[in-house]
Image (tube, rainbow over all chains, first blue to last red; front, side, top):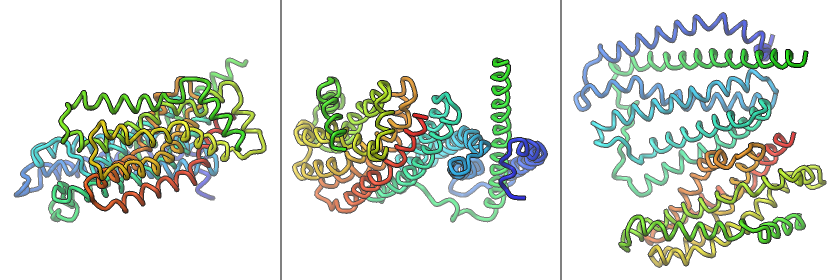
Amino acid sequence: MSIWEYANPKRFMQTSSLLLPWVTAAAVLCLVIGLVWGAFFTPEADKFGSTVKIIYLHVPAAMMAISAWMMMLVTSLIWLIRRHHVSALSAKAAAPIGLTFTLIGLVTGAIWGQPMWGTWWAWDPRLTSFLILALFYLGYIALWEAVEDRDTAADLTSVLCIVGSVFAFLSRYAVLFWNQGLHQGASLSIDKEEHVADVYSSPLYVCIAGFVLLFVTLVLLRTRTEIRARRLSALLARERLA
Amino acid sequence: MIALLIRDLRLAVRAGGGFGLGLAFFLLVAVIVPLGVGPEPAVLARIAPGILWVGALLACLLSLDRIFALDFEDGSLDLLATSPMPLEGVVAVKALAHWLVTGLPLVLAAPVLAVLLNLPGAGFLWLVASLALGTPALSVIGAFGAALTVGVKRGGLLMSLLVLPLYMPTLIFGAEVVKRGAAGMAVATPLALLAGITAGAVALLPFASAAAIRVNLR
């Protein structure tokens, strides 16, 4: 019994169909509890007013945007090394979800930034590196769509994911360097995690758990769809031959 | 390897459209920007480092699809892949040829365009140094993008989408060197980081590019 048995598509479909309802229910439960608790049962912060409540969407989404790319990196490596199709398909399935989380992070940040910083957008290191991350997701998804042969597409996107990870990492520290080097005085970003009191952080943890579970749910669901699409095209090809 | 380099250079110079096109584009960017933002010298001096680097980057991007696409179409890439030379070496030589045809002229032409854009005198040396150090990375990274999209029909736009995010660290450090140089500040740190990116890209990316070409020729 090894973990690689789950790389068998049939085994994956069986296991994921068993898991999916539970994970979905847990995700919904965590998100409802976390968001309602965060939005209605926390006091207003003295400096920020009610805008502080956007943290319950912003922070988990931003965390998952990075985690999704990490997951794609791992599954891409597994595909390149062990050639498990489910692995490549799960990377394909995760990319649009990661992009959505990135956009949620950017948009909620802008909505929060408008009243707090007085601007929708600033070329702050964190904001910039997130925008670059969104571009990486876009390129990755576009490459999957553009290459017709599926195994070729899986190989090429895996290579792109690995190289892209290195460059995304470099960009992240490049922009940090760039802004701290010249605009030290205008550091807009407050380190939210360190300043948050327990009243706010407890619902935040529930929300983070909810977003992790939501990500797992969506990846399982989309991977199952990809596997079914693969099976369908195999059936059609067989029919055409017969 | 040298034979391949000479062949690629000859093709670039004689086949028309490749050689000089990037340079002309670079010149146009440097001319268009003052027309767009207005001719005030102070404004131009401030944005000159960024404009010159962005222009060099776009000029490089323009000619990338010529690295592998033509050879892929007429089948010579298959021959190169089955030749005794390792494919990594082929990629490296082709990137070098691209740099000699596109990057090197940009480095040489940059000081002239910097005069047009009113770059402060202290920045000229650093402009040439940063471009000379940074444009090889642009060629190698571009060759990787070209290798990924070589099998895609009309892959030019897709390639820009893939390559531009990869160019960002190079752009940030390159423009930073010129900006600091022009302001008379110390440039050692960004220059070292820029050189590091170039060295790392030149050393490692040919392997990724060769892997991508092997997949595409399969």
